[in-house]
Structure formats: structure tokens, C-alpha cells
Length: 56
Image (cartoon, rainbow, N blue to C red; front, side, top):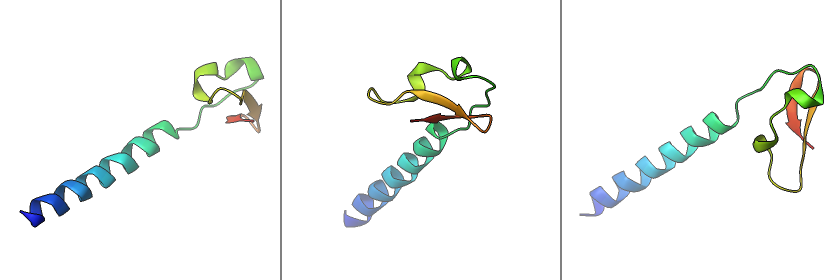
């Protein structure tokens, strides 16, 4: 029974790391307007820095 619990915990950690990697993809840009507003949490806004969208 404890082996199942450890397996589920490991599976959860693996999938959470996978989701973080998916959400961390790089978006190319030329201007600030090229960056989608949905990529940043509420107090931050997307900015184009060195042709990559970043939350500032």
C-alpha cells in the first residue's frame, strides 16, 4: 500500500514539473504589444526584452 502512495507522489511531482515547463515557453516578440497579456500574473505586465516576452 505504501508503494502505491510513493508511486502516486512521484507521478504528481513529475506531472507538476512537466506543466511548469509547458507554461515557461519563450514567446518571441518585436514590440511590447506582441506579448499576450494572459502570460503574466495580475500585477505584472508583459514586456518585450531582447526579442523575448518577459513579465515585468
